[in-house]
Length: 403
Image (cartoon, rainbow, N blue to C red):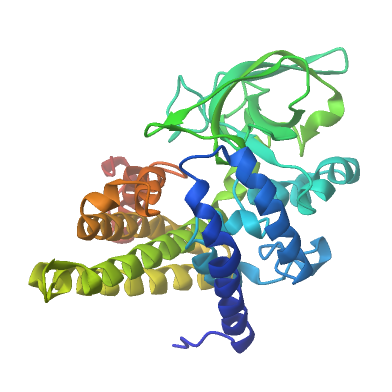
């Protein structure tokens, strides 16, 4: 087995790490006290510098102005970017925009790409993805109430969505709606490009998450589409392809989420070790001298390293063999890495004591925001069930026995 990282990727990783340390991490102090729309102005300067350096769109090919790193290369870079909540945004590879770029590249018409993709790639606009509904579980994305009905050569959209990340200030939303309710389940949905200026589009509120209401890209919105009139060219891809389009963005997205979580865990681990080495319980009695703290440090190091290798192997498999061959691996890393990150964050916060509960460090922000890792992109329970069923199928358990 080959574990070496290509030299150019290793060098690039260190360059990006230095960039994040020098220009992005200093902006984190404002996350708890200022609206993101204000921080965004400072980030615009950082993004401009990143683009000048060629550190732009690492997830995309050179054809689209990206760094052409592939799934595995971007996974490695995502770890460095994940060390800061603002890291991916600085290089224009943040969710949901990164996934929306891929969808527009794959399914958009030349006209749709010119109007929406080109400025998205340039970082001139933002977007959101509008799928989850308050009335139905996000773990079953086929069960939706939002509808798009043909009318006068166009479409009329009606429904309610929430957890549309980044809708506040976005130029457009990709909205999943039922267009063919009588079709088989995977052919009922379609995807529409909806300008946020369209009549009938209404951002109801930015949801309060763990006591904080975000703004701008760092927000999760509830949106109502009420008799929202759309032209025929708003349909993205073919009619009835909504489920396929939605699922196509999840495989690579989960890999990159997991490597971002490795970055979060590494940042928390570094802070935990530094605190344990410097904090004294009494003169000459460092916190790191306690065996329980040493145990946390050792276990965290082993868990992070093992999780990283699991994700990188999954990324390699996805890149070389495709999503069908890698689907079990992707489910494994989704729930495993989320759990590792949560454990490391919790230990780091515990080592910091009361300080860890404050917003004087980034730990409390990570702790609030990353709890959702076990829920979004498929809750842990769903992925564990899928993995177990595939394993049991290989062991000979009949489908009707796998409940």
